[in-house]
Image (tube, rainbow, N blue to C red; front, side, top):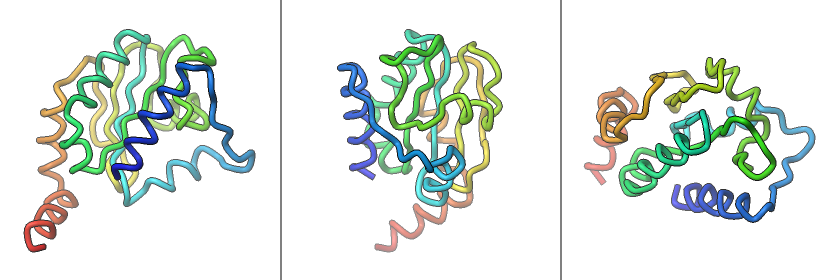
Length: 150
């Protein structure tokens, strides 16, 4: 999981330098999302650049909690430009549509490990609120129980 967060942070850094990752042409959005199923919870933040960056940074400040809950934080910035798009997302428009993000207004979506949308909010949130929400989920309860036995 640490690798995943580091890749996400590194991808944001490279994106700011104008470097983009090349996704395989045959990799569809659904394949990409499916590759995270049962492994990661996704937090997708969409909106104008300033709002998205502020919300993303709130999560990144709580790295231990993000890592412990297997969260991958993704960003979709409006209006899109080559410089501000998250290179980890092969098709941001398709991902947004699949998650019910239908406008450029600020939105944040939590996707569980099962691939289902668990929360969809239209205002900035305190990541601790979602940590509490995640910690109450049956799969997370099992994870915590398993980790306590180890």
